[in-house]
Length: 175
Image 1: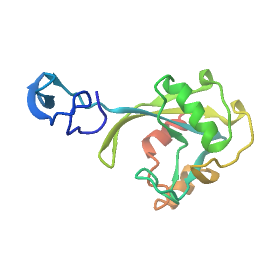
Image 2: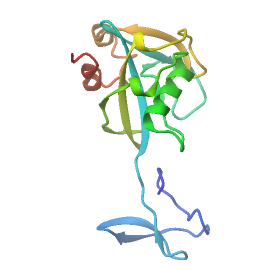
Image 3: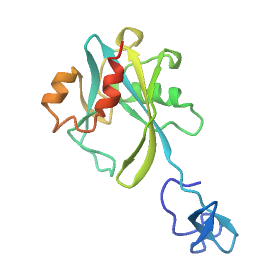
Image 4: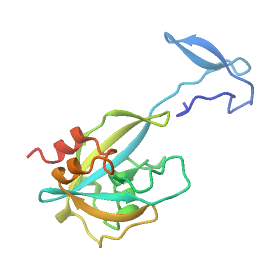
């Protein structure tokens, strides 16, 4: 399984061809006689809610294909191989905002399929009450700023908050 379209076999280095496997054309290694399945990668983010606002982080300017420097986004990222999505979400939350949380305090809001720059992933979005978080708000390495935003403020600044999925955001306020 791979997250990006492979050109060569990761086991033997042979150039891949294409073959019909399970009703789809898939990359195939003729030397190893095995297909490659391209799978979506899990991602996890946390809306930390404080009253009528949620915490967003401003992306730091970095040299990365993922970085969208200056835009405001949901704290989150990809769980490590040995983490559950909830554990990955709270680790990313702490790395990016300084806030710590118990994975059991997260409420799953949604898990839509998304694409970003050719990558496919499932964005598991969780909700956490600010009262359930511990620690001091402090931007981590990937964040240049942290701020609580109301949905109205986000709607007024769609240029800088375009990465925020408004459907998921509305779930954070669905009491």
